[in-house]
Image (cartoon, rainbow, N blue to C red; front, side, top):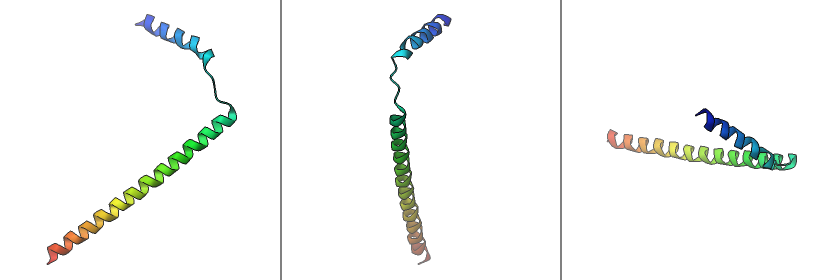
Length: 69
């Protein structure tokens, strides 16, 4: 078990110099894209949730009006 861990760490350290890191400008652009995507997704989910809540409330009102009759 210790040998496997040692080999894994050794292999990871050998691969580390081959990593191509993004430039500062690329990192900023990618971060902005991710934040915009998260915001759009959050707004979409909030709108869907609001729609389902309103629809469910409406159905409860309609069902309640049938009971009263």
